[in-house]
Image (cartoon, rainbow, N blue to C red; front, side, top):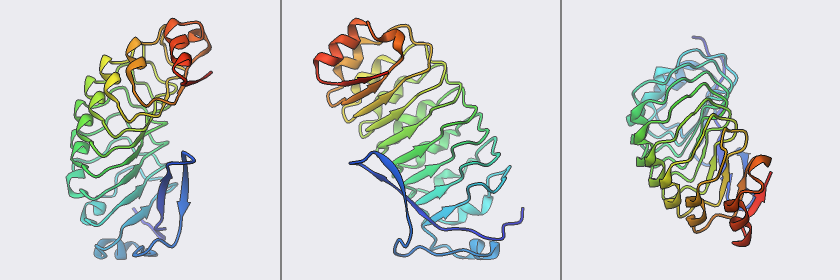
Length: 232
């Protein structure tokens, strides 16, 4: 693989606007113009490798222990390596619009991860160890082929935004009621024929996106009475 230029960027989540914004000029960030710099400079904190036609995960990334932000969007990655344990300081990982078929178990070692973007891939399952990501505030799993979520999803006590749109979910795990920090839930374009009553017990839920066929559901009506914004 030949990389001529690497942009170092910082991708931050704006809690108030609930949007993803790009921020340049972050202190301590470096501009990597040549591949050999990537190999030797271990102080890099943000790295954007989006739209590089990558088919393999660059193994050199494991040698960047200070990395906080990593963007690999819009490539051709089918798998991820088992070395995430080396990136314990990582706060944001974005691998949207690739061809991923599986998430490695050792992603659970990213104990400081706050934002995880895995939308528009070929994922069918989510590892049970996902529940170990205690710092996770946002996860986008939209536009995959996920048929079932593990019960451990309910262990994500810090999660505020959960994107599950356009999958193959027929039901949601009972443990979803334990997501005490959840503010926004999107389950549109799945195969849900009803909403779990457990959703009513999500204490801080503010907004839920569902399909039109669930509009008359009893749970939907109860959510509205609670003041939850129900969007179709």
